[in-house]
Image (tube, rainbow, N blue to C red; front, top):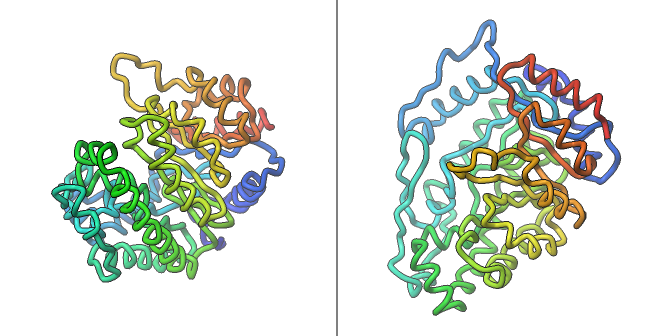
Length: 363
């Protein structure tokens, strides 16, 4: 990393060293954590955020100004490095395969671009696709402008292949085809695997010219290759189908990098945990409890201790989002050497208090 990062994060060297040791399974002085809070800079260089659509997603000047506003208005505590997450909306790899994005104020939607499973062999990844070219240009522009003051994540790559197939066909048609035409779905998945590796490699090569090693969409930095995948559609399938359709794609992309991360979104995915824990190159599971409007306590990490202990007992690490007041109670009940915390705070003073508490808890 570059000394210029001190503009936003004076303790970047300590955070870097801690992350290198943590990924390597070495003892650290405390639990690594993202500890963030809003701040008000004395002399902001960017006055306000532009919410114009689609400019906030696709216009480099607008995107970079909005990003610098966020950098200046955030306390980057713990192992949270100043980062530009290049983001066009969820599952943007669909745009590389023919689905036209529909940008809205808060997200991006895609209409399925295939009529049924029989059209899956027609999909192709065109290196000259305008959205892929824009993604690469946005990464390059941001990394060049950073001059070491912040890190840049990879933009959307072709990933989460079963989710991608759902985007191409629609959920219902995909689920029906998995039952009636499983080999066609698996063939499409396997055809996309090299595209996933290629888009990862091209993104990494662009950014590696300007910054040290790798930071993923979770904004977790590693001194070697790291990548996150997911399968949100797995909430709709059995563990047997997860093993047959999803595990091969996860295994392929994790084998391509040094550290694999899985985004587990919601209790419906817990039934797949045994299969996930068998994947050798999966190192970290990010737990998102999902949304349960009638159960406000479901977001309390202390309600998921059995899940965290299962993950850690298998030798994996777990990423947990935790409110400040639950940090100590949580760390008193799980293994501290295999956890990464995300702690969002209401103000900088609270964030600094959390960091002091983490120091006092130690390992």
